[in-house]
Length: 209
Image: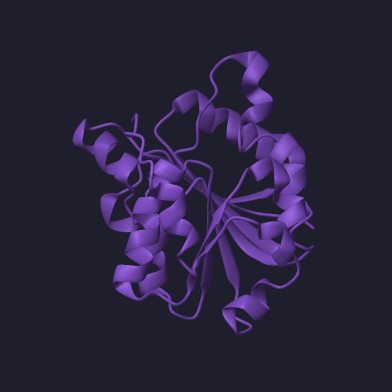
């Protein structure tokens, strides 16, 4: 989904106290930033924020970080955070390739990958957020026994992700190849796919630190 360029997106978010453009300066300080010792969950590729906003509103005892590169998309999420008065969400403008510069070992208790770019060409597979190249990064920031959840509409990406997890030694807890609507926190992309009667694939797994 191509988003129209929003020239004021960056200046607007720079005025938002909940959005961070230089997250590396907060490495090791995220609990301090939230002001409590609650678990911290990270969504990588938060888009316009539907998922993270719904999760935060439903789970006030969990802190949520939403990482996104596309400022045109995330400015929508930033407005929702303000409008809903949500205190347990922070947004990060950044690239997942730099996760180890943003977080200390053990800072993240759960990772969400929702409808990530599938990168279908084999030469691009290392860019997949479920690939070993990223699993190595995740292992350096997650707490002991942390979980990872993945949702996608793409069969090949899903099957490959299961293989990546297995080869990496991640324990697969739950697999669902047609996730029921009632069990899902629906994102903007998910709603689009469900309208076309496309199955939603889901896996929940646990890191073996």
